[in-house]
Image (tube, rainbow, N blue to C red):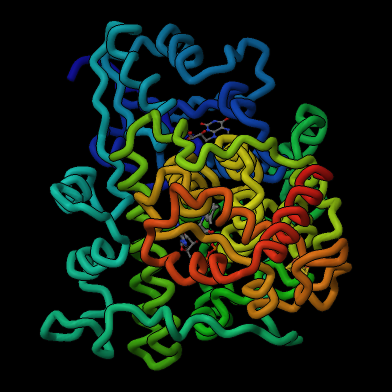
Length: 509
Ligand code: FAD
Ligand code: DLZ
Ligand code: SF4
């Protein structure tokens, strides 16, 4: 190696043991961290998401300096800021005259393509290190997927259990005899005054400066900063992790799918922003969860349910994202074309479930999985909203959203726009499911028991309209045989009334 190494560290690479840093000689390296308009505005991110990422970046730069690294930090409002990673790399090369560049691979096609140009653009050798904060390598996912007709998460998850040894007994069999305890994770919840709440971290001086800047510069971005409570340092993220392990994990399994009015967090961990930005290590977290199970502090359905989300779903969606390529975002299997309704940005709708999920999202940059999948996602699916617009909304609005994880969850799992690569059937439901899993319907101006008429829950008619509208594409799916039989058995008048109710509602959107 000749000369200095320039090491760009991106906003979701805030880990001390990042692959690009591990192999670098501290005394001969400069870390470059860049706040750039290209990243803050390529979609209109929620104000809390921008605040979280920029504040966590500024704190991480301090922590790196504390460990002896030289960090060149570019703030968003630096007068010379060129507004893009490549523009700032060019300026940094003028300042530091490095002999080479080392970087950990990016988490999005957009940025990956940018980085792949750097060698030609700057005439310097660029080493791109694998991101080994994930459990599966790209090659391992490709090998697993090779030749399979269906890529089901469950089977990939078992591979990850074998690879990590998590929740296996001495003979390599799953703890308790079953791989998956999902069927024990579907209880509705009751109001509980002792329900744990995530720690509300008080903004320090660094965070307050970011809040003020975001408030001034991003007035046209969605969301509010008045509830900003995220952890922005490694230590704070660890505190939230311990709180989750001590107070919420034991009930995580039982109430994973439950929803309650004015309770955004229930027994969820609210750790995804920290895991995805690099403040928490996902495998360490899973080992901590396993330890709680082995100590007898939490039941198996909680520990397994949680570990499955991380080493199963999280790794699996990443594998799909890179496997499907940069055009995945264009898929629209069901040909859905309707524009995203304005109420996704205001929460202003009479549908109480939607007002809750969207309102909490605008306040916190957070909603838990079932709200994302079965409320806002389900509505967009059955109302026939353009999946690309739905994707952009999720990418903007959640503090944990980066394309590698958000896109497959939204476009694939929630909108069925990839035609079933990720989900074996569309996650479409009527109001009945929402009524079973939440207390929302009791607070709603619509009647969940009615299917037609102005007071009927819109999810009911939309659900049947969705099935009827997409019959050609979906009727061959075995998992939809029962609803299609049910539809076929309805008389003509009933079908007409349901479709009319759906059309009336949609025309009023
Ligand atoms: P918990 O319920 O406590 O779960 C624990 C952890 O498991 C999470 O922190 C997360 O790291 C992981 N996890 C759980 N489910 C998934 C999943 N389906 N895919 C990947 N990881 C998962 N998650 C994101 O991290 N970023 C996103 O942009 C994102 N977009 C989504 C969009 C849609 C339409 C849907 C249906 C889901 C999306 N998810 C996304 C997955 C999931 O909703 C969030 O990970 C979860 O709600 C985060 O809250 P939590 O930390 O309290 O999770
Ligand atoms: C999401 C985001 C935002 C809002 N701003 C920045 C930024 O100013 N600087 C930065 O390095 N990263 C930011 N990020 C995260 C990046 O978009 C993310 O690292 C890339 O998309 C690669 O996955
Ligand atoms: Fe949502 Fe329908 Fe229940 Fe109202 S009645 S909360 S719209 S499911």
